[in-house]
Image 1 (tube, rainbow, N blue to C red):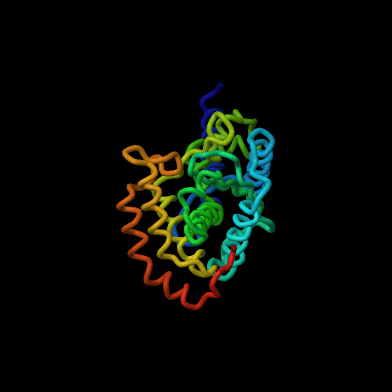
Image 2 (image 1 turned 45 degrees about the horizontal axis):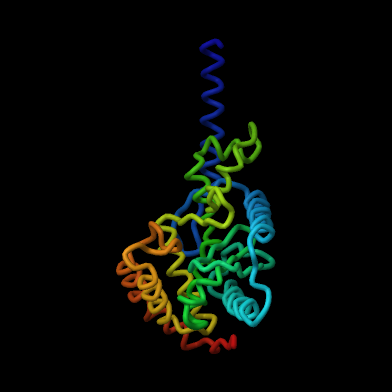
Length: 268
């Protein structure tokens, strides 16, 4: 290849990457600047397919009052999205599944798909604590954390491949970036910055939905006790318990003002 041809290709590549960077720079609903390059339609398709695979391959809790209770809490949370974060791009429909799994875990996938492990309900001892978890997961989706993580993990070149400018990339890398481990259902943690943002956005959502925001602090204390010396999977590499609780407590006054104006949620 001639030097001039290499130079032209390098220049074209730089221009493509620069354009992608400029197009992908935006702010989360909480105001943090982020770089998220993957088109929303692709993220939604990947999240929908991953969720369908998980529902087929893992046992579900489909009887009793638990699915309806979890659905009720999620509906109260998502009903407040437009009021609390009007600029956020929210899915037209939210889906939720309760998996028969003893680990205290929950996750969200692009496209409005939320999963809850039945073991979480042993740690989230009331509906408000469950709302803290679901608000946190909804916030991950509203803030497009999956897209941002995929952009960071795969790199700009791989994202350009992903969106079809050149070729396909390995599906395992896509699942990892979505937050799903090699075995479907093993969810991977977001960064500490993402976790803190989801905590605080979720706090506002649960308060607006009529769930006592102080229960978010109680939830994370329960999670810390459940983990002992080693945190459960849901908290792996997440912010330290004390730091997380301190951050939530610092934002409780504002959340309590929102809670005071809300109708108390009833998901018996």
